[in-house]
Length: 208
Image (cartoon, rainbow, N blue to C red; front, side, top):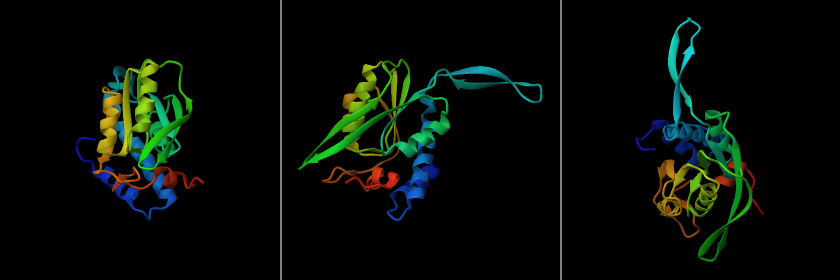
């Protein structure tokens, strides 16, 4: 997001705070999804149409020329995806499951499941709370390009410069909307200051 939005800073205050409850964390992620989806509406194509009001008057307003495909990265994105769907309730939803595997001083990503359309000739909103290394979102963005996506709009609560750089290299036309760009990654590849592990905090279950 270009211009600072006080509401966004409030959501970040809640999300970053280590004492935030599970319920409150999910709520803030969901609201962040809706806020980012609304901000990103300028990336979509819109058409104008006349509507009849209850006062027997006509007004000219807008509606999406086509619904975006919402793509959530499991499982951390689930609360955010709910918020995006609040903004675009008729949009189709696709899911991709990815997990990061740390190997010493390196990290890689495995995509173990995907439910994407065979083809999609339209805009996509790709949702993940954290754009850290960029490995996951770069991989998914390439898959979306391969099925014909005309525009990829990434929605992330917090992004790191390393992830932004990798995403731009993998998908130069992708557009990023984020609440904050933090200073970078630590030696465990987490964004600092960040908000910790968005999956653990948003799902309430720590993987074995």
